[in-house]
Image 1 (tube, rainbow, N blue to C red):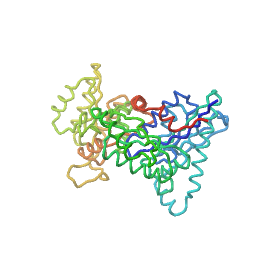
Image 2: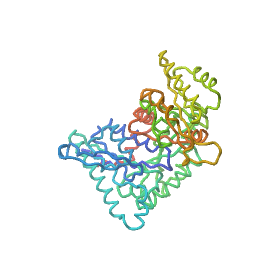
Image 3: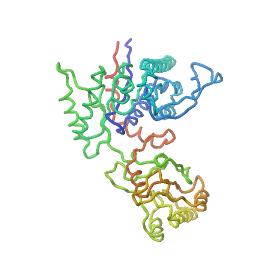
Image 4: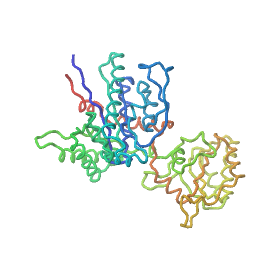
Length: 441
């Protein structure tokens, strides 16, 4: 009987914010449906953005009553584990190394050992392999697979001896490179990252080109394929890595949710927290447009006319200065007017306390929101209109921060995660990926 030996798949990007997690979501989604969730592993060997979770023993090892422990993990690990139900894996194995502030200095001072780091990564990977193989044996399935998600470009982590290419080599993984759509710059970035893979002897399984303008989809696929075949074909005719997928851009995935705005300004919604994962098209990654965002500089009557002209599906993020009590109360009043009439109200309000004089910065809190107005906002409650404070920011600075932010996936934002997965899956050739990352004996 033929047995397929599957190597781990290591997803790397050519730089930050090009869709590495989106591709990882699509891979895990497809393989959980193809092989069963018990047969799929996932890890982020080196993480940066952390959160604290309770890690209880998995069912196939220890009874839950025997306890567990809190562990610090990369945020993407919780997202993947929770969304796809990978409960056969322990959080600690899925996120073995974290690089918080000060970690690099500790490593260079000799307080952290390279050998210990790699030992932790290898041990975590072997535990994941054991768990997925046990699932395959229980289900009578010979197929199991592990997806490893990198951090940033291929070289990230090199200063502490844990660059993506080096870790991939340590695990015997094949790399999938993800790059943003284009031609010249796209290929240049691919070439830089390929060089580091070659340095560590890592095989590139293929390339995914992401966020391609729909009107240039066919052109991008054709010419990136030509460039890779021309430049990456081996000296003895070894075939170049294939294009595994070309994914058209979908602007919605670049639209921030209110949770992203909270994170940007280090604040929480004063009201409307039930709508934390509502998304707004504020012009991010949409050729500089600012549809869905409006700085209020008019008088109250003009502002009210603007809101009242909007239909129930309108979703605008308004921005005003904290001194505009009239605008704030007008916003709350329009929400209540619509509520009485059964008309949906989906707009949000960002209240800024900083000045526009060019002399203050985000550390200067500026004018404070009056307690009386703050109480009126809070009285609207979690189901009310979304209102938050951007302390120390002028309206113009706040608008710039919102427009240029890069929204990130959140484990609680099921809608964005699901839409990203559904968007990416149809454009990736999973059969070709398996052929490139496995051998049969």
